[in-house]
Image (cartoon, rainbow, N blue to C red; front, side, top):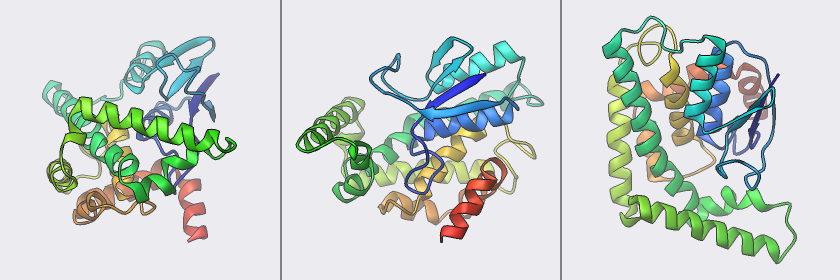
Length: 241
C-alpha cells in the first residue's frame, strides 16, 4: 500500500502544495490505491513534501516519485506521445514548476495579506509565542530561498509580467485541446493543472491571479481537470459556495 504524505485540503484546494497535488493526480492516473496522511517536514528526507512510502520504500520529490511509479508499476504517463511530444510535455512541466511555481510562491509567502490568511495558518497548532516565531523564521527562510533563486529580487509588477508570459504560453499550448497534449492527460498535465489551479485559487488575491483569469483556456482546463481527478472535492466545494 502506498502512503502519500502531504498537507491535506486547505485554501479551497485539495492540497495547498501544487507538488503534492501533482503526485496525487499521477497516483490517480496510474490507478494505484493510496492512503493520504499529513506529512512532517522535519522528518521528510529532503524537508519538503510530497513523500511516499511504498511498502517501506520511501521516495521524496514529485519527479522522483513519478519515476518510481513508472519503473515499479510499468506505467507510462506519456503513452501515445512521440519523442517530440514527450520533449514538449517535459518542457511545459519545467516551465510550470520552475518558473510559474516560484511566482505563485512569492504571491502566497511574500505578499503580507496572502501570507496572513495562507501559509501563516500552517502554524495554527503551535502556542504563542512559538507560533509567531515559527511564522517569522519560516517566512525569512522562504524569502532567502526566493532571493537565492532570483524571483524575490524583482518587483511584484515584474514577477507578474514573468508569470503572465508562462500563463500565455500554457494557454497557447492548450489551444482547443482537452488536455495539454491531446484528448487524454499525460504526466505533465498533473503539474500544469496543479499550478494553474494554484494561480486561480480565489483564496489568494494577487495580480498573478488576475492575469490567470484573463486566459480562458487554462481556466476551463483547470476546472476540467478538477472534475476528472477530484470529483468529490469539487462537489463539496460547490456545495460550500
